[in-house]
Length: 174
Image (cartoon, rainbow, N blue to C red; front, side):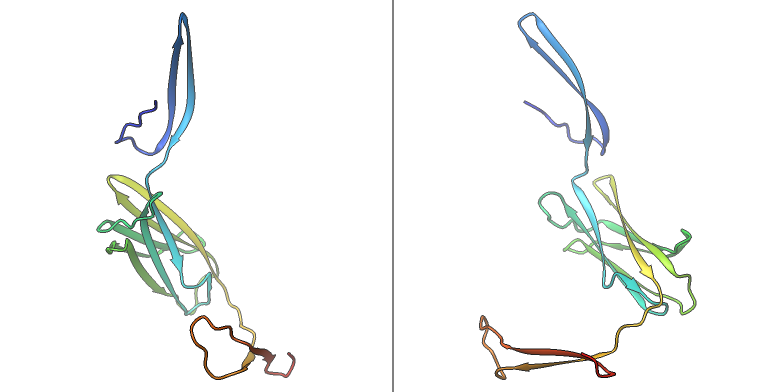
């Protein structure tokens, strides 16, 4: 049997295996990695932003593999610019659903490129961290008009909808 001792920190260790069968014995060291039983996940409302827009960030701390939320732990959320300069930092206590959030409104004149969001939490004395990149760039959305024509005005839950969806650029091309 294998016994795992609780209280070890996540990291790389050597598993020392010794077996004896009659007068023969074997000794082998296996490299093992112990992983924490929690994860911090980061989500944003969009994958990329323009200068002047607001980045909405949410972090969730979960136990692995049960996916149960961890409440009451402090979660620090940071945003760094492409040069690694921290431009935002906020610490919040995880809700009953394991959630914490922050937002940052970007300046209109700001460095473009890959920004990094970092979420850090400390669960049972074990630090956990996650990173997520988001792009800040100037872009323009295509301008088009979408119309839908359905075969009737209302549907009940579970009924199949039938109709036509038409998307046209404002200059007339479909």
